Length: 425
Picture (cartoon, rainbow, N blue to C red):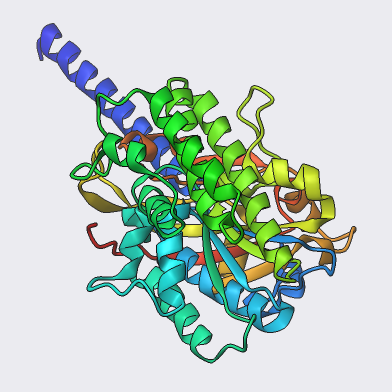
């Protein structure tokens, strides 16, 4: 064989070996090792774990926060209803609050009270495709049905604590102004009905000034707290728009606003004689200890600092997730993708035969082998509303490394998480 031919074969062999090494590395990284990653002691897990119905909320709790490791799995959306039912029936909680626009959630709130009739699924009002699902529709329908037989003052309420959308907030604010005899003509002149936002030529400062004028007049009248809050949300939306020029700053500003809005919701419920509320958002927003690297804290951290043991955080994770995610940058198409969390607790849950398990960290004995995983740093799944192929090549892009007991009071583990099937908005 000629020398040049041998050299060519050698190069091909080296390339093939390198490709094989890369492939093995990808598989190893994606699955958390050739055996699926570390696993916590299954005997100990079986002793300490329970089901959703075993969740016990301390008496001093003011805010119960349920996180979700992904926005695109049916089980995490179903858990909203399961945990809320438990809180309603066992703890007298009457308020559900979602990481969604306050105005859109007010439309849902009116619907569950017998109003806001619509020809389509009312979940569309929430403004995000990820919530336009069968699971969210089931939650809303259950709340509406509950309210048909609820005693006076015992009705359920649906709140939102996000501020990324304007349309419903604007419409409800103008509606309230017109009902109360407050002049909102300046606002209406700046609003583009077709686009559902202020005209592109509208100057932000003038827009905010018009909102403040309407808000201040409404605030002088009784029973306008909700309308005034619609105005505050519109102002927050403008502040968020400015802050998003710096992504980290924008995220911190959004979380700060969301914490303010959760406080407002709690105050509304306290005025009704209810001392505890239920909120739901991505894990990254409800964690007790999380920041954006500049001493700017997330929503859960801010609330935990203020309410201490009155803030009860429930995290979630998966062993395997087939997750529904946007398939392109403008989110007009969606697809399903498979991920593994590499969480040793989630793996133990699966091996113990649980579909969904509950682990209360305060109930785990100090000498239990589980404490090394609960108190130490482990990998956990964390998928937002976005997908790029790099996530499969580099699994660390969809995992976080932290101490579960530092972040949460307990966790729910889903062994096999299935994709949602969102409807287009």
